[in-house]
Image (cartoon, rainbow, N blue to C red):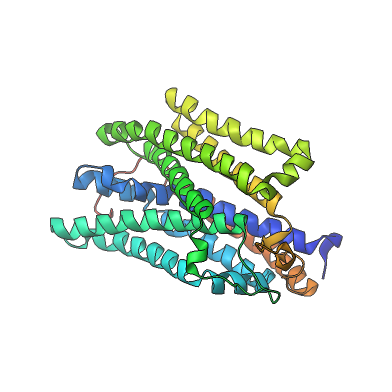
Length: 343
């Protein structure tokens, strides 16, 4: 089954990229809110911070689950290699995501200060660790990992802790903190609103510095991640959109337009993921030092019939996920306020 004669392998590469980009954009801000959680002073402020993301954080993670399931079904060889090679790192990521979810639910179950403080620290640390590990995973995919001629991971956990991947981890933390701070400004009011506004400039500076260092490191040490843009100058427009979106964030915040700043932050993340996908294609897992062993959208894919059936299912399911996401954000629009149903 091949609807309209599509290149199904490339189509699924794009669709999975969209799912993971959606996850980064949506769960990115609630991970960022978690990373900033301990900067608040009072129990009430921390409850408000939790309730800015309370109605949406679990729905945001649907994108991660959907992306992982799509990767498993469309590119099972790549899924097997990545999840076996990155096993310990992914277990740590799952622990971080699970622990922060437990912290959100358990924090308000008891009134004791030590109890709430414990879960506050857990929520913040889980958010920071999850953000960092997501960045490290992206850094390793860009840098490349050692694969043998059977496409099996030939390294260890410590192979993944190379300087470039660690730099991507820090950059991702900075990006999510900026994204989360902008979202928190949109959802808060009063004294907390002013306090969060005071964090944004530092978050923007933190991100821009790490992003500039990462860009230089990529051009110097990971040149294949800029090869397609160099070969096709028209693609530089994507990089230009990314730079303009980032530059527009402080401008919009200066004029008090937090929603526009948030849209610019989303646009920058989409442009970054687009550049990443353009430079990676058709590689799913690049082999380093031997690129001949790389897993691509063609040698790691399911059968054309499977990809075709999945595409029909996706055409039905993806609009449902989008509709659910839009409806939740619409229902819970406005400022976060505490009531008897709040965390």
